[in-house]
Image (cartoon, rainbow, N blue to C red; front, side):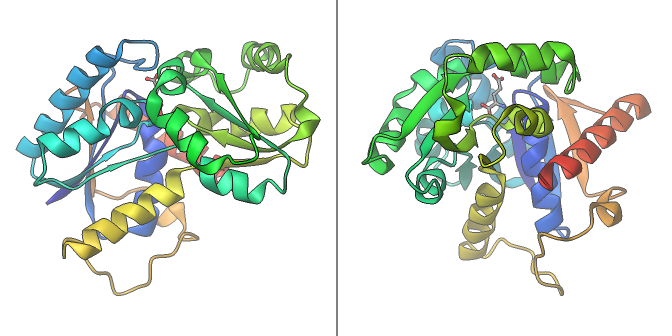
Length: 275
Ligand code: DGL
């Protein structure tokens, strides 16, 4: 059986990448809903209907669990889908606000996410629960999803866009930057250049994959491997893995050019994982 991982687009590869490293023995179905990307500027009703379609697709394609590798879709639809498909383990990524507040040492925490995620109750509730000292600020970065989908990760335009979005913030007051959208992981090098050097970047990929492993293990669905899960596993060994099928809005990707692009995205993510 497969583990289904999906996002509106290439952002979800951050979770797949991490999952392949920690669970090389599993089979994955990766689904980028590129017909509907971006989710973050759509209405919640639209996103709920897209997520529902993807989950039905995953169920009909032998998935034993589904990871919503999209902070926006999790904020809008995770609870609803868990109620609707109670037989299916559904794991959703959420911005790593809790660890960021813990690790910020009293400095401010900036959470960057899509407009829909920022306006959803789920993120506001999470912040209220963990932010007793009122250290957390939320900032929308819708443009980054568009840059990512164009494959534009490092450019003057990306730098200018981020400089403009950060212009009103006194960045030296911040200790943590929470990447609350899986697409933002592709830009870690630019974030790092623009931020004072003491700011730590944090995202929810590792936590989400660990949660996936816990859920699968509790349900007896985790394929046990001889070796211990190891987050330092080398991507080099995995990159020719035949354990993943890639879909774009329900269409299996077989074209070698497209598969080559995906391989390059994994390579970039591997570099970003080390930042
Ligand atoms: N990658 C998604 C997230 O984590 C959203 C991107 C989009 O707007 O489609 O929020």
